[in-house]
Image (cartoon, helix red, strand yellow):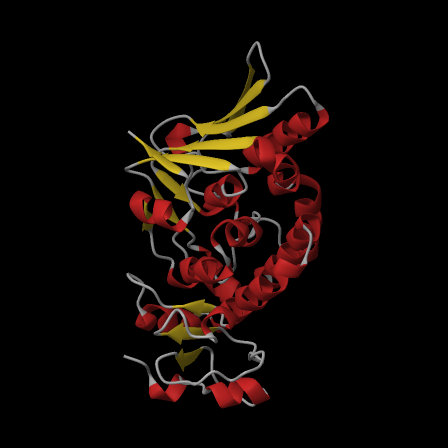
Length: 316
């Protein structure tokens, strides 16, 4: 059911005269006529409900499609309005940017949210961090031919990506970019979990957002992965969450086991996917479905991921 209090009309979008006190807006695609012009969107997310063939549908930030529920998106945007607004505006910008510029824009947005009240509240309320597991590692193997295998090797921590793994992944992809004889790069993981994302115990350890942005500019694996994406293949088994999914989504070909699942949980932390995911996922599945994943935080199963093109094939 569409919440009438949140509804924005086509006429309002045509004129750019929408309510300024909302954290999310809804458009009834079953009732609104074609406005005959480019919609002028408010700063907050605007979600379409109804006819996917409506001329307005492609101009909005997302369109509800099963099994996603509008109530879930409303609750998320109202709970984390600054993060929801920021990721929405970022996703609108990215199609017009080169890959490198898009990663820079993502890092700017992420840095801003690192200093936000929403993220600070999450840091203060999260359960006490457990002692960090052993430092992560990334194994590199070069076969006799032209293939480099990159393996996440921190299975006891669900291959959560800590600083050591981040730096090692950056170096691995930089190596592939420097060596023209490497024509295939395979990214995989040890154990039954591809990756649980970034190491949560390290969140908040770099207190200055500007310094954190500078670090990402130098060491973010996505900076190198995007340059060799046309040679990159990924094999996924089990959970593929946050930073793990963000990196994997750059690949030209992704296979997953049928028990695999995919999730972007960052909005609940008051931030957005900041390991390249706003760029990689929006280029793979489109900005509208990327926003659905971010706002909902919902797990996507392997069959759904295949249907969306998030993965290219399922394997037993």
